[in-house]
Every structure is written in C-alpha cells, then in structure tokens.
Image (cartoon, rainbow, N blue to C red):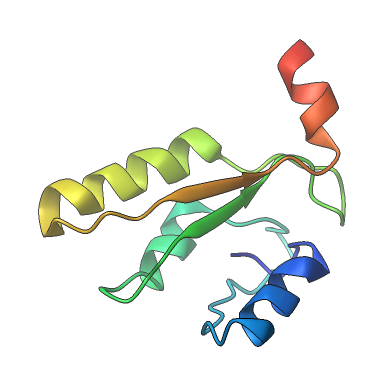
Length: 97
C-alpha cells in the first residue's frame, strides 16, 4: 500500500500483527503504482490496497494496472494476491464517471 492510505490500515496491521509494506511517495508520484507495489510482493503478501480518491490529493490509483500486475504474478509464480480497493472519496464519484 502507499503511504497515502487511510490510517485504519496502519491500525489493522498493528492490531492483527500484519507486516506493513508501504510504497513511499516521491515528488512526482503521490500514489501507489503497480511497478512500485510489485517490488514489495513476495510469497507472504496477503493483499494489495489501492485507493480511489487519495486523501492527499484526490488522485485515483491505477486499479486496473494493479489487477494486471497481480494476475501476472499469479500466472508466473502461482501466488493468489487479492486487491482491496479503498473507495475513499472516489466511492461516490467513480461509478458516475
């Protein structure tokens, strides 16, 4: 997940003893990219979190790109990695655009 996730994800990881793997934000990229997420995935990965409507700037993450990336990993390595799409502010906007 990117560092732009809701604080509930940090709480979830803490309360359920899940190792967090954050993609750091950079000056020209304020959201999670499929390429950066893929760098952190291994056989212990239990999911990828994408956001529609980042709390930082409202930007939508590339959910299709994340899905394509985890499907590629499934085909190559046999790993089943689910995606959670945090609707955030985009939960109301995205269905209508």
